[in-house]
Image 1 (cartoon, rainbow, N blue to C red):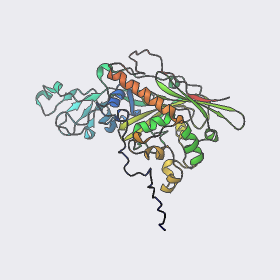
Image 2: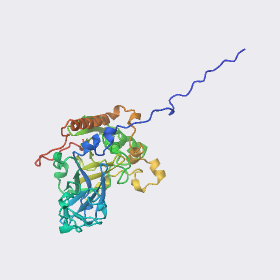
Image 3: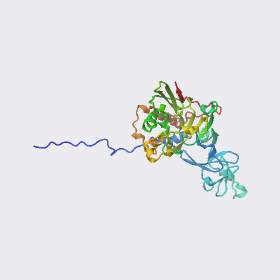
Image 4: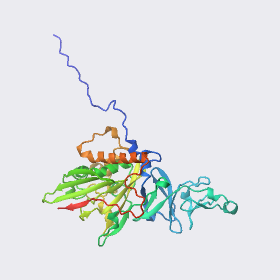
Length: 397
């Protein structure tokens, strides 16, 4: 009698033979000439605290460009291409003087707009020095930050002001912070900027990552599962969350991801109620790293730092051991572990990712506007334009 042959069914769904992953490069790449790089260059970006511009030249990297920031003896901040237009020595080694920055190699002096003021080794201080203009970018100061515009000169908008930072309540003052508050880790975070920007419209990760999975990193109210709706304004995607608390109160929270890179997130510490108390700007350093600058209305110095998550409920990110990072992951671990650039082709978006879809669509619309020769949303050329107003905040009802 022949033994029955049991057919062997091969395993399916393994990682073998999977296609190479791809990313949404039109959204992630920020270098000059790329779609997103050109869109972001139509806006002002913070590149440092006001104190970072001083008599010591400072290296900064913005949207994939390496630049030198300084402040001349007249108090004017300047931002210039690093390589001297004479023979390419770095102005990082230059000396800042009353009228500008002087190259260490042959002493050429450039003002904050790149004009060559002196060529000491040339007859008459350089009869043709006007032809040797150093590449530069416009900078302004506001809210304790230095801002730069890296886009086409004829499209330079006014530097916007924001209602939540212009109208101060009694006892409040503005504080600027460069600790990448909201990024969950060090000042410079080694992954693509979009991985954080999209995190702004994902309220459900707060309930899991910041609460049930890693312990209460903020306050117990944030651990309550919310009912969520999203909508789109001209300049943002809004997340509207409602939490029914165990004591019967209704905790209503609105947060926004604003154009071009704004994190309009009310404090997760749920202290003061009402309108959002701080704004953050996600600065893409290049395709593989970003940082965040934050300005907020505070009642005491250092208040912004209290917004930082504590991955085990007690310690800050930099205080954890490697084992603790694995046990109590936060935003940094979740974002950076996606890879230097997230593999979008491998995503399986669900209903709770509606805000992410809406945010990508809003960015795509701005890319299309620029491609068609139009101005993107959120830029103004009116110096008397009213401050930008957001609806974000915390309310307890």
